[in-house]
Every structure is written in structure tokens, then in C-alpha cells.
Length: 86
Image (cartoon, rainbow, N blue to C red):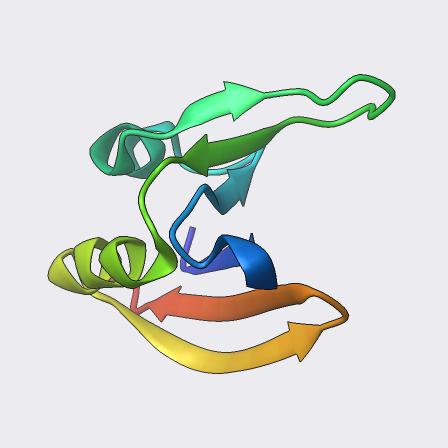
């Protein structure tokens, strides 16, 4: 899985950070210390960590991911990460 989306709410720059969806690589989610959650009313799950986005991006860089792009969507900050496949 070479792509990963990381996001947080603008007022929550210190965490929590959303690091994946229900189809994300469990090994990467475990490495980040993410927990899988389903918000009442949603029919999908997301992985969250308590770390701020900066620490999450640093951890992902250590295992070969790099930022492709970053944007703000309403009150949400989103980073698109990519890792070259071997």
C-alpha cells in the first residue's frame, strides 16, 4: 500500500491525528500506535493516534514515506503520503 492520508482538525494540531482507514496496512498502523475507531452513525472505521501530525509525519518518513502534497479542506489539514514499492 504505497499511499496514505494523514489528517487533523485545525484546532487540534497537537492531536489526535487520523492516520488511515479500515483498509490501511495493519503493520503500519501498529508501528504508529494507532487505534481503529468507528464513530457512531458512520459505516466505516478510521485509525487515530494521539500524536500531533508532525510526529506522525516524522515516524512515516523513517519507514520510507514522503509527503506528496498537503492541503487545507475547511477546518481539516490533509497530507498525502507515498512510499515507493520495492
